[in-house]
Length: 260
Image (cartoon, rainbow, N blue to C red):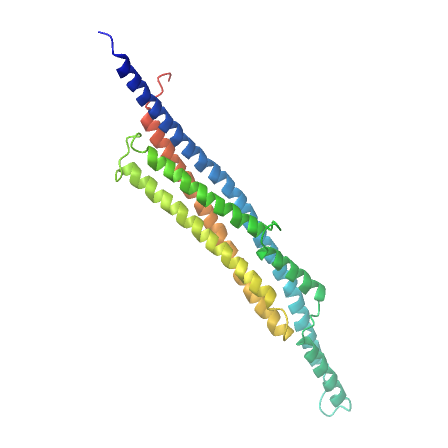
């Protein structure tokens, strides 16, 4: 007995829907793989940001070292009280030390270069700084990761995955972990940008005191970027595991290859 045409059409539609959802699942896995690759760009830009901040820190240290050396030498040239040049030498030394604590840096080129370097860290597009590029790309990838998750969740019934079973729970936990690590990355990068901004704004006033405050903010910024680098690597590792869960679910739904 021939199968009615309407039944055949219905079966074909079911098969087409099934293949469509399989393709959608594959696209979700491919998107996760691309996110993993593009996170390497975020990592590279964050690492370049750290290098910029470290370079600025070294320039500031040059000025601080020069100041410390000048103060030490100023104090060593003061003779004993019974020396006839005691008052004049002491007065000269006092003026020299006072100049150290003025607004003018001893190495204006070093301090200026350090300030320029730090300023590039918190600049916003279209300047295209490493930190702005890292945060911009990360923001895009967070959105794409969310979309990939929605597509996979939509396909799970056709994959034979029920909400609450082992595969579902493993994927759901991994998806949340990826998002959590990515958001921690963004928070750290944003904090680094803020501290860099504060470092530049501290220039002025009593130079030695403000220079050290500037370095304190700079060191916080460096620490924030270093923490971000850790979270970026964790995000990449997490999204790779998430991708594998999706691919395994797809393989299980497709069944064994008949040509193998």
